[in-house]
Amino acid sequence: MCLAIPGRIVEISSDNVDSALVDVVGVRRKIDLGLLQDDKPSPGDWVLIHVGFAMSKISEQDATDQMNTLRMLGEIDGAMQEVQGYGLEEVN
Amino acid sequence: MRFVDEFREPELISKTAEEIRRLAGTERHYRLMEVCGGHTHAIYRFGLKDILPANIELIHGPGCPVCVLPMGRIDDGLSIAQQPDVIFAAFGDMMRVPGTQGSPLEHKARGMDVRIVYSPSDALKLARLNPDKHVMFFAIGFETTAPSTALTMMRGRAEGIRNFSVFCNHVTIIPAIRAILDSPDMRLDAFIGPGHVSTVIGCRPYEWIAQNERKPIVVSGFEPLDMLQSIVMLLRQLKAGEAKVENQYKRVVPWEGNRAALRAIAEVFQLRPYFEWRGLGFISQSALRINDKYAEWDAEQRFEVPGIRVTDPKAAQCGEVLKGVLKPHQCKLFGRECTPEHPIGALMVSSEGSCAAYHSYEHRKAAMVTSLSSIA
Image (cartoon, rainbow over all chains, first blue to last red; front, side, top):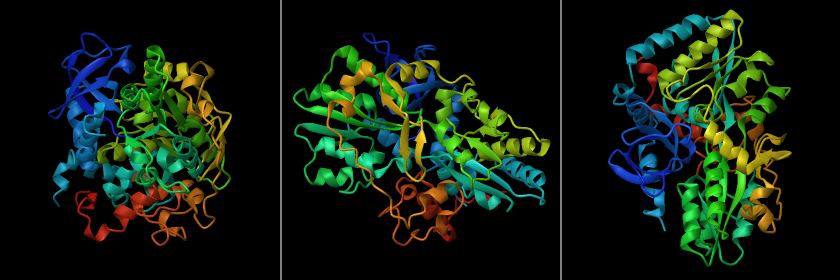
């Protein structure tokens, strides 16, 4: 629940500036950028994602470190399950 | 020792642990509270206690939103979802949390329409996909999650989606820290501040802890090295007789927090006069309710809510464990009546609860390979 998952912005939706496609170790899902409206990320930027919303922009090194933290905490499976669940693709 | 290689900079971990031993000396005892459940989980997972000197005691704080949610709120949320054509949507963490009549998952087995969502925006999406049903999102979490719920409600309102509501259980961390500090049996020296909550609220809201209460607080990351460095920073302050707010987790936490997220919270929520915390009791101005502008999307205003109050079994000593007066295993029910499979008390409910973390890791310590003691 308090997972913060690092992802890289792949593209920003052309019809909704608050919607972006992110890549989390190969899994691509839509996330919401509305909480970063003061400091909008661009494609290629890394963000920390929490419950489907980008919470902060981070560096690539921080993203790697954060993934490592999740791995150490044994939370990678949970994180990937969460990311795959975004957009209801894997549920219901 | 297969996990050892995964720790970043093992030599630095050894050096930091050595610095902690040097600073801690042997003369006095230090009681440090980690506020965040994520830190509690990490401390047990990494066996951090094993490399800390005996006079540094870590007290596990109230920062696990699932754990501190009173059982009556689960009953209330489920009672709304008993009504025809209501879909109960919640994060996976909530699904096994018991109410008096069973958990959301058990209600699903009895025919309730219960869905796991990984984002509040997916609960809104469910409402779009099911226009003939009402989707109630059971919202929990501290300031980390509250902005996402708020923004989802703003989007629902802007789109005019009327078959969607939120049953709001969002809580705020500062009043819980205040309640703990005000507790007469509480003796704490310093705080390890929450990481991800602070990405939203920043570091300023902790300044009263340093200035008024004269307790150091260091906002910390979640890796072993992060937490050890934070402990060094706290000990340096304590040795120097200082009390400051410091930020060890600068790579993620900006000092000012996330203003857009705070604006979203302010747009949708207002403080409740008081709210009950499992294990801690009623704490004033410690939780968020939905304001009148969003009343139509507030499940508590839209539906009849019974307002169920459930008293935890007297034998469960969650409050004492939460305040650090007792260790998890010192509770009479720990590991016997109360286990992660059959939680009775709040702190056994989620893996971020100190009892569940203690049960998972401490109990299996003999088989553990994640302990840091081998490198420190």
